[in-house]
Length: 256
Ligand SMILES: [Zn+2]
Image (cartoon, rainbow, N blue to C red; front, top):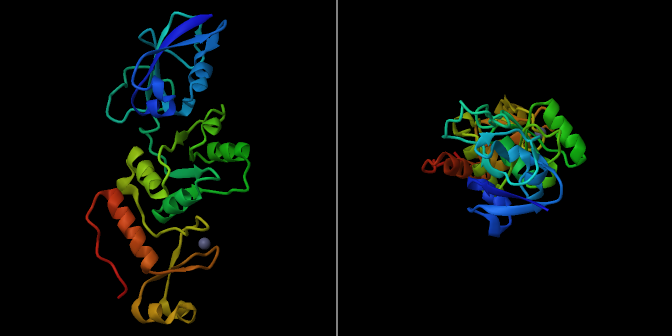
């Protein structure tokens, strides 16, 4: 039996068994182990790791461990400059994603991201393998709470979503990738992920509820599903959510 000592830093601790958080611990294995397999066996997908130090030296995921080593495992850095050090993966925070893919369980988050203007693939008919492939082909950041999905070798750009509430998840994603200034609210259909287009009121007038016809002047239409959007109750809720994310006081909105 061989033994390594490990320490996982910052939010990587959330992915470990509680007893291993915030401290150095020992891990035992037979024979040899590849760093990627060993780290993932403890619950941390490779996509979450930016830097691995083995005995204080940067090491790749393919590093074979034979026992006696000490591993320091770091998440993606936002503020710490490690440009002189060999990263194990691309810093996902250095090139913020403009497109996302959300797994089947994150439908609400996907709609919120679209509402905020981000191109977000969400299609529950896709198998995990297809989703990972599409995300890779289309250079999308894959968002999931499924660590098994992130451990797949073909997931190049993926990110574990820590929170469970969809509004918190939107805030988490925008905060992690510093997208506060990239929001284009209400520019995209929440159902189809297609950019909406402005449409004159007279063109849609016969499709509007009387109250809306009376009070609203600006409308957009989704060219895919033909839904009409206007500033209504739903819009206000979203505005409040976006203000919270931008850490701004809520903008008073309302019909008329
Ligand atoms: Zn649509």
